[in-house]
Image (cartoon, rainbow, N blue to C red; front, side):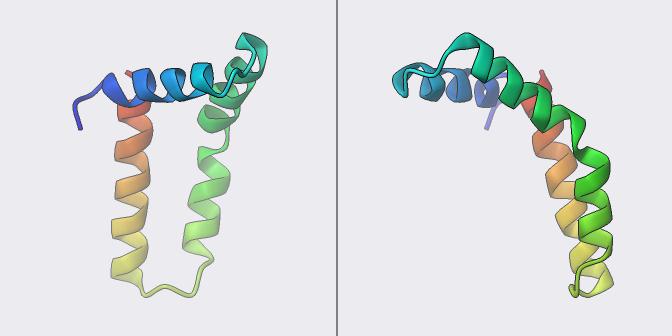
Length: 68
């Protein structure tokens, strides 16, 4: 998926769901502020180390694309 399009698709979904701009802003703010918690949860999970690493890389990639 091209960078930038993830955020556009999210905003389109929010518009179709008739979410207020304030709520959408709060959701985006939450997405971007919990990355340390996500990393901690992944590291504390029962997945094997290679799966943890792959999962964390995928999360960070998607977050980076979302932020573009």
